[in-house]
Image 1 (cartoon, protein in one colour):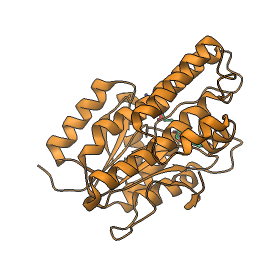
Image 2: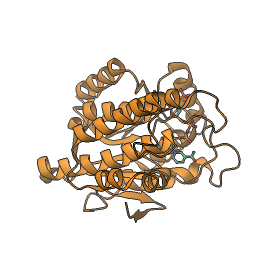
Image 3: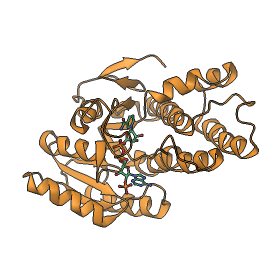
Length: 276
Ligand code: NAP
């Protein structure tokens, strides 16, 4: 088994994830895994980095596929006995003008952004080594979507005692409410992406709390963040930041020094802790 530190970035064949891998290849002392659901696109991205003189390793990972997550988990366990840095970056967003029914957009978006990210966490968090860092890429949109929720929902999402099961129940209810056409009446905002990212931010707060309760001595720091508005296939060419600039906050959180005791359980943008 290798003792080399290892960093993993999900959905990193392009966009912000690719830029995070690029930065980690330069700054992280250890093996950096570029992962992608499609091996062809992943290998191509690794080759692109190689062309820049950077060495990333590749492993297939589709966060929608539990089997893919578990085979990656087993690989990390066997080869490294765990991992040191996990960046949950993979995500999707329907375009504003997409004509797919809202209920379909809700189900598909939540499946990847919330349930897929949660499944990765369920399988990989127990493997994160002491002094490890976990970064869940959320979005500022989670904050505006939260403000668009009913007072009752806002209170639940801001609660310091909400459990992961309760959060899963709420995210499932959102999808069901959209199917019944009652999501507005039930206090949800009109954004599937926004609700999925509320899920990611709240999940991060819960996971940080669980680490405090169950693994306090391990000094693991876990946060949610927003990369900013970034020129990628998701956000388009009009966005204000380059992918490299978008990677800055996630990379800062992934490389917090080992003597740092925070941020932890926070929502961070521009390297600043924001109120939730
Ligand atoms: P992007 O260019 O569309 O890249 C998304 C990446 O996620 C791609 O590599 C994609 O792979 C991957 N992915 C999607 N579904 C996946 C799955 N099931 N399993 C594994 N990988 C999957 O988007 P981006 O702008 O870089 O976004 C990265 C993250 O930042 C997302 O979580 C996004 O919500 C967040 N974010 C972006 C912005 C922005 O302005 N761009 C702002 C706030 C937050 P394929 O190539 O196979 O599709």
